[in-house]
Every structure is written in structure tokens, then in C-alpha cells.
Length: 318
Image (cartoon, rainbow, N blue to C red; front, side, top):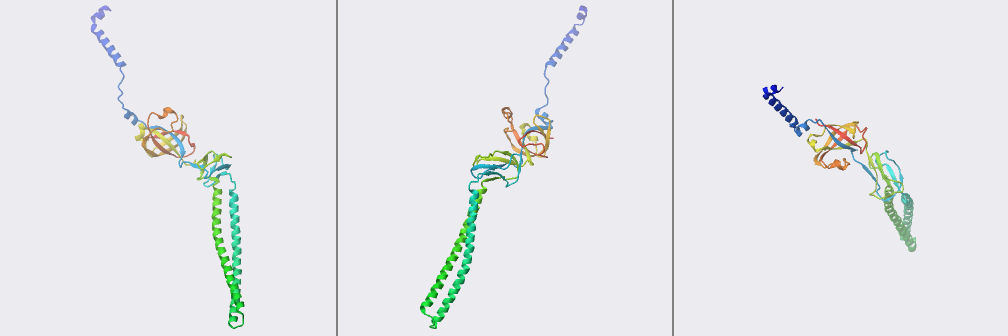
């Protein structure tokens, strides 16, 4: 063996050099020649976090006046129509005021009817007295009647004229009173209606806060109504992909943290600006790293989507 090594020293030197070169090459990290832009260009889908909301927002239930809740006519989950009474407040004397105003108007109408009959009677009586005076005047001109009798008939005729004028003026005044009373009735009815909280739009009661006996003011929120058949998903996509998200792209919805599909849709709105992460990110660490672009996605169907539910939105950006 010793003779072999001495005979071929150059082989040993070459072997050592190869081993050293191999070891050095294996310990050196490889250069990453693929850029971030290149890698992002290969991405076909982007996942954004989203929240299900009513497409037309919420209709808020509130009382136009202060009062106490007397009766709650609905419960959460009920469908209501626009104008439907959902909550009644303490009535107190409101219905009585309406009834009393109507009774007073009926009395005025009855008096007016009686006055109309009186006018006819007074007109007939006036015609009789005028005819009587004219007869006396004719007879007096022929010396067939005394001056005193003619004067008495004239006074009776003029007094009747004044009596008829007075009745006519009373009827005019009654007509004004009737108009004022109709206004009082309308005001009383409006006051009564104000004690009834009505739904301003059709939809489903998604939140009901009113309780019997509760004191409310016009600023008190008593509930919310939403159209659960028309929904939107408001989402936020990371700024890395903002230039690849566009209106019309298809989206698949998944339950947060799982692969369970809950629907599909299309992007209908893309914000023109970048913003800080919003309330969609509920933990502190979720909202402090990168900015986002806001999106609105119209679901193909509302089935399987619940208002206020968070969903993962898988956007096809190809």
C-alpha cells in the first residue's frame, strides 16, 4: 500500500480536491432566481375575508314620540310589510281625544242642519211679513189703513230681515268651526298614530329590542328589519392582489376555517382606494399588518348565507 501511494501521489491530491469542492458546493445555498412578481403572477385564486349584509341595508324601528311600550306585535324572524304596526305605545287619552273630536263635529253638523231648516222657515216668514207690509202700504195710500198699522207691519218685516241675516251668519260661523274641528280630528288621529310604531319597509325582523313597559324616546332604537332575500357580501382583499381583482370575477364562498362551500357569486363593486383593515378582522393581530381593497360581491343565491356571518371568499382572478 505504501508503495502504491508513493507511486501515484497525484491521484490522492486530485481526490482530496474533488471532495473539498463537493463539500463546499453542498453547503452553499442556491440562488432564488424567481421574483415575487413572478410568483404572484402564477396565483389563480385569492382568498378574501367577507361578511354577509343586507343589500339594501337595514330599516330601523323607532317611535316618533316618547312613551311606554304597551304591546310588541312581532318577534324576531317574523316577516313584516311596509306600514305594518309592530309596536304599540301607551294610548293614554289619545283614542278618547279622537272620539271626542268626532262627536263635537257631529254636533256641529246637526246644528248646521237645524240652522238650514230654520233659514227656510225664516225666509217664508219674511215673505209673509213683506207681503203684509205691502198690503198695508197699499191700503194706507188709499186711506183704507192707519199709518200706525202700516208702520208696525214695516217694523215686523225689517226685524225679520235681521233675524234671517243673523241665522245666515251663524251658519257661516258654524262652517268655519266645522273646518277647525276637522283639523282637530286629524291632529288627534295623528297623535294616536304616533303611538304606533310601523315598519318603514318590508322584510324580516332580524333584531328586536323593544320590551313591554320600556320607556322610549324618538332616538331609541327598537329593532331592525332587513330583506333576507337580497344579500351582499362585503369583503376585503390584501393589497398584494389589488390590481388583479375586477368587477365580474367569479367568487366561491366557504365557511370560515373549513372547506364547506356555502355559495357562489360575482364581484359587483371594487373600491377605488386602499384602506386599513376594518371590523371584518376581529382580533388585534389581524388588522395591523397590511392594507386592503374593499369589494362587494353579489351572491347567485341567498340560500346558505346568514346575515352578519363571516365567510372566506375564493376569488378567481384568472
